[in-house]
Structure formats: C-alpha cells, structure tokens
Image 1: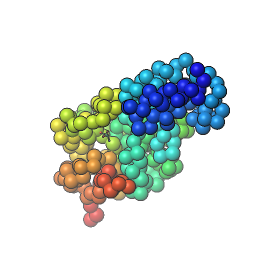
Image 2 (image 1 turned 180 degrees about the vertical axis):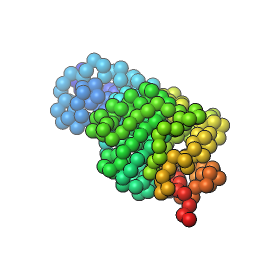
Image 3 (image 1 turned 60 degrees about the horizontal axis):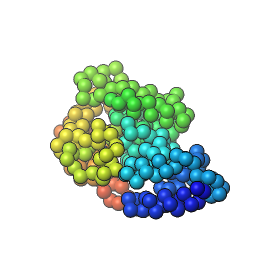
Image 4 (image 1 turned 120 degrees about the horizontal axis):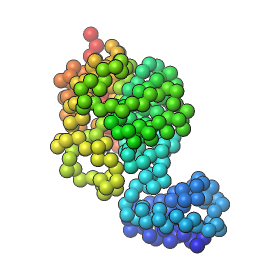
Length: 277
Ligand code: GLN
C-alpha cells in the first residue's frame, strides 16, 4: 500500500479514538519512515508504506500516547526523548518554565528534584547558559533518558544526574547549596479520575502523591531551606487547585510564596523564597 493510501486508512482507524487522527497518522508515518513529518508530506506520498506502520497505528488506537510511540516530545522548542519511565513533558510545564525563567538567577547552581526526562532542568540550562545543574530521580531508567537528552542537547558538561529519593533520610547530605531548586513532583491524589492515556501508560510513581496529592510537597518542602543559598529560590509545579494548600505547607516552613498562573489563568507554579529581613 502506498503512503498516501495508508495515511487515509489510518486516519479512518484512529478517528473514533483521537481528535487529531490525521495528524497522529502523519506523525506515526514519519516515525515509521525515520524522516521528519514535513519531509514525509513533501516527498513520500508515492512510496510504499513501511511494514511496521500498521502496528504503530494499532498502538495509538489502543490509547497509547503518541509521544511514547514516537519516543519523542517537543517541549519549549526542543526535542526530548521519552519512554514510559518518564512523564511526557506537558505544555502545563512550559508555564512552569516561564515562571522559572522569570524568577531563577542567571548563574549559579540549580537542582531539579524528580528530573524525569530532563525537560525542566535541561530547558533551564539551555536558556540560562551560566547555570549548572544537578538532576535527581529515584528512577534509574528516568535518569538514563535524562542523560541521553542532556547529551543530545549538548548540555552533558553542565549537568550531573544522580539516583536519589527525597523520602529517604540523608539523600541530600553531600549535595551542597543551590541558588535555585525546581520540581514537578507527583501531585495527583490516589483515586483521581485521569485520562485513560495517562492512567494506563504514564508512570504512576511520577503522578500519585497520597490520598490528597500533597505527600511529596509535605515531604520535600521542609527539607529545602537548608539546601538553599540566602537568596535562593524554589519553583514548584502545582496542580491547578493546589495553590492554597501547597502555599500553606511552604509558609509553615518559613517561606514567602507567590503563585504564578498559566495562560488559561490556572495556578500552575509556586515561587518560594526566604522572607526579606
Ligand atoms: N499534570 C499531570 C497530570 O495531571 C500531573 C503531573 C504530576 O503529578 N507532576 O496528568
């Protein structure tokens, strides 16, 4: 079957399950051919569709996110490799990057707690060339993905990746202090209704944080003051309804807090600093 015809058929197959069936089919075809989507659209219509294309379409029809099938996701203008060991970088987190770029210093040391694919940390390092970073994660598989992304983005010299777990005492003892700490910790409450594509495919350990979704904030935030320089700043991603509760945890720890909103007006990031004076 020719590519053009295979694309039409795949679009029909995906239409019941995806709002973006044609686009999905095009991305899958480009991935199967190992070329960019634009190259595929410009020049591949008359070629034979590759044998593995139908299998990719089937995976998508069963709800698997496109990013896991194609093994990549664009984030803040850069291409990140992903696997089911890491959350797929979301546009929600691009608003966190915006907040972090506004509030982080231009130079110094930055720590990312729960680095995953590296989308947040590596974007910060790429945008602020005088920062150096450490990314920690409890998942060794996630750290391998982050390392690959650091290399692909030419940032490997400026980042150190380490397997550490902030729920284990002493995890931070030899890390020193940071000018900026960022995190997109798990913040979904156990039992929450998630889209099937998230629930069935993305790593539960990166999503769920106890019965109210706050367990990781409760664990992590009180450990941060000792890890910050005097002017240090913390930027946390939060769920859209969590600003008040996470601010409270931070204020009880002695931080001053500021909420940042995304373009839709939802609270999306929390900035923590030591109060002046
Ligand atoms: N925003 C993600 C979701 O709702 C959750 C990310 C997280 O827990 N850090 O799918």
